[in-house]
Image (cartoon, one colour):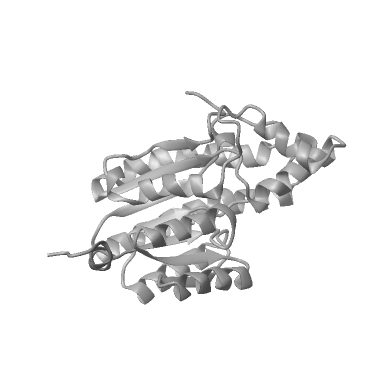
Length: 267
């Protein structure tokens, strides 16, 4: 008989891999999944930040494996998943969270910028899906694939042609893969954050303000003014939804995008 919650978590330990895990939403997702009892592989490009997050988790009784990888590189992503399975002995959940969000007035977009943003935001998710699917098959069980889209991937946002375009793509990919893998006991869902207090969002606000000859605060307020709940999102608000998608309560949910925007959009 399980006598306490901690013992129960140890007996049902699951393994997750999170990309873009060194800061912002990704870091909050990692922390929440560890709280939920997951061992977590952390994937990002910034080795110093990645190691810092992993050390915080490991020093507080969690299990974290830092892995430096470029999600736009298919070989890097497959290697990260393989190392996760080698280290922890399993993989149950992948969260394809890494993303770029530059402000891109339509006439300013270059081929190099297009390739970079689509490489991370779209190809990075596809490679994560493929690598996780391969691992699930080899391990002989199903799993959960969770992809990051955005409110900007549900309704297009001005001056975000590249970012919005990639996030619309992720919603479509999520729906297709959910159908393709459903018979293998694999669910595929997406989460769509609104305006979240993250370094990436502050960079976008800075660019928007700069383009308009205004302040960073003006840029953030431009995005935030239509939120029904009248507050910006904390990264933890998004992590809570990912926790649901990673856990057993979402076992009968697939192909869906859950919008976490405080009431910016209503559908």
